[in-house]
Each structure stands twice: as C-alpha cells, then as structure tokens.
Image 1 (cartoon, rainbow, N blue to C red):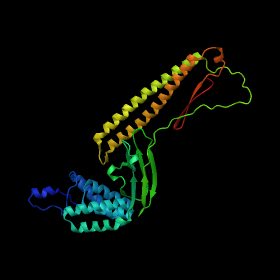
Image 2: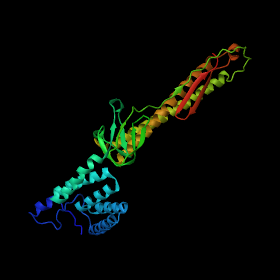
Image 3: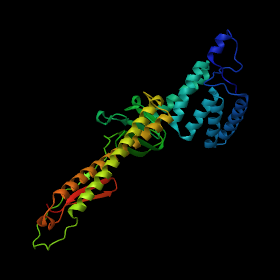
Image 4: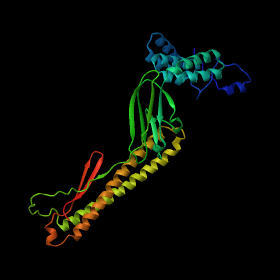
Length: 342
C-alpha cells in the first residue's frame, strides 16, 4: 500500500514523531484522500502490467499515480518502466530524482538502487548540443527543442535526449525563423546543431534591361499619358502610406507582446504563456518588416511616377514610350522595376 509523504519540517514540529509510512516526503500540495486511493490502485495496476510486459500501459499508470500522490517507490518503478521502454534520457532523469528523494527520506536501499541505474545509463545516453555563435545571438533570440524553450544557460551543453525524432527552432523579432529536424538513435548518439545567423526578409528590385534592336522599331503609342501617369503615382504613393501605417501598427503590437511576455520569462526560459507571447511578437515583427518594405517601395514608385508625369510634356516626349512601373509579388519576394524610354 502506498502512503503519502510528509514535509520534513513536520518532523521538527512533532519533535521526532514517527511517520505513518517510512521514507515519506511531500513534493507539492498534499493529495486528497481520493487522490491517494486512486494512486494506490493505479500503482498496483502498473505493477501488474509491467510484469506482463505491457510497458506502454504500465508507464502510463505509474505516471498518473506519481502525479496524484508522489512517492519514492512509484518514482523508482516509473524510471525502471521507462528504461525498459527504451526512453533512456527520461529514465536517467527520473532515477536521478529518485536518488535525491531517497537520500532525503533516509532510504539507503532505494538510494543505492537508483544510483546503480544512473551510473549504468549515463554512458548509453544520446545527447544533443545546440551551438549558438556570438554572431547569431541577436536581441530577442529564442531557441526551442521539441517545442520547449532552451535557456541561454543550456546553449552549447550536451543535453540527454531519448531516441526518435526531434526538432530545433530559432526565432527572433524581425528575422526569418530557422528550424531543423533529425532522428536520434536510442543509445550513444551524439548530435550537434549550430544555429545560423537568422536572415532578414529580402526584397529584390530589378533594373530595366536595355537592348539594341537591329531594325528600327515602329512607332508605339504611349502606354500612359502624363495625366494618367500622375494619377497612377498618386494612387501608388497613397497605397504606400497605408502600408507604412499598417507596418507601424504591427510593430507596436509586436513590441507590446514582447513587453507583456517579460513577467512570464526568466533567465533560463519562459513558461507556456511567455513562449506564446514571444512567438506572437516574432510573427507581428516579421509582418511589420514586410509591410514597411512594401510601403516604402510603393511610396518611392508613386513619387517617381508623379514626377515623370508632371515633367513629360510636348509632342516629341509624348511620342516616346513613357516609363512604366511594375510590381510583381512572388513567393517570399517582392520584385519592382521601372522600364521604358526617357
């Protein structure tokens, strides 16, 4: 039968009174009577499933029992179950925790058993090292492994990992994110992931091509008359101003999300709320960058078109092909150009 663990300070308060269950020690809020009863049932079912070789089901029973009513014996059984299941990194961590709990509870037998498994597992562990060069460490950089933030203190440290698929992602405000996945072997696999310098969004502006035709070109009517060119310039500049305003709003939203995440982030990482707020800040920052670049291009193009339409007069100039502005979006790139005769 499993018994609840009591806080060490209780022994001092009771001046050496004995525990109801030897080696018991609380690690959180005291469980209710219903939690204790259910935890005992789950523990017994886990032992039965483990003996029958149904490891996955047994581990789930031990996990829930440990969550409801933490106990040194349950933690040892959970670690042993994960070891047999092949999740060596998690098992090693649980044996380390069980060793510490047993030492605090004065259970030398459990402490020795946990220490034996820790020593045996360490050379078998697969490990991942995430290297972040100095040039990559821009402001607001967030590194994640399997969806959980890796604090700055864990960078360039060999982290024990279980075998299977893993992901590494890096994000920063106003930068293109970096992500990669890999499959680690169950034992003794050593992986190193180096985070590159995160790129900024790219805008490509093409210059007009000039060709020398072999035959005289026939007269071509102007594509845009000066009045129309001026109207196009005004419209383009207006659209540019709208985009710049939207970019400013997106940037303000990004900065607000970043500031809001500060209470939920610590030197070694963020909680779930802080991580979500940091992701929102990165997304809004990228949107602000793209809108700002697009608005600037439209504003310059509009001013150029208005200027050319205002200063293109007379029959000789109207007979030429007036300059034309092109703006062609493509996946990930905004291409702009000015072509025609001057």
